Image (cartoon, rainbow, N blue to C red; front, side, top):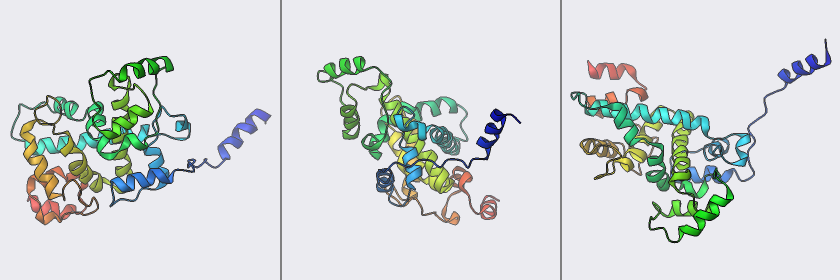
Length: 266
């Protein structure tokens, strides 16, 4: 057996390397635990959720895979919501409604600031220093204001990064990553409650062309209140007997007692 071949075999026998946890990883878990007090994020998961692929530490793991999962979870819950509310109407284009409300940039602009992600997310702009300096020089004269203080912090830390060069995209990826991480760690029931209480109410955007169409706003707010409101406990599950049939359909993917659901719909 050749030396090269023996070396190749030995590489397969090595135990997989654990995900390296940064010395300050506790701050990532502390941040998410503060934003979602009813949940407890492991430091390793929190660090991955809050590390974008553009950061130098991404070689040790980043949130790309969790963002991928989170996008699909968000879309599934949103489409279930739309279908329940508009099941007797045929004029709605679900694909269009989904892209209009769950656009990554929109999530980065309207949801990420509420979770203070600009304060903690590890990322780096994928533009040259020359571009950064150019934007820094014109920033003071710009009339456009950031969405809130958290995005202002992100802009200050990375001068001149605006929507066109990736700020809202990166923050939107982080929102999706949080959803993917919650789904992975705490399950579909908690992720579903997170969607209806911490995301959907913030993308209604009345009087705007983007976001959730106005005809769905009343039902979205009603479900949010039924689930405890925007500050409700994410771990509390409402008894199936207290839900209406349409809400059972919305929550089909989170059902933990299928026999009771079947009986209720019979």
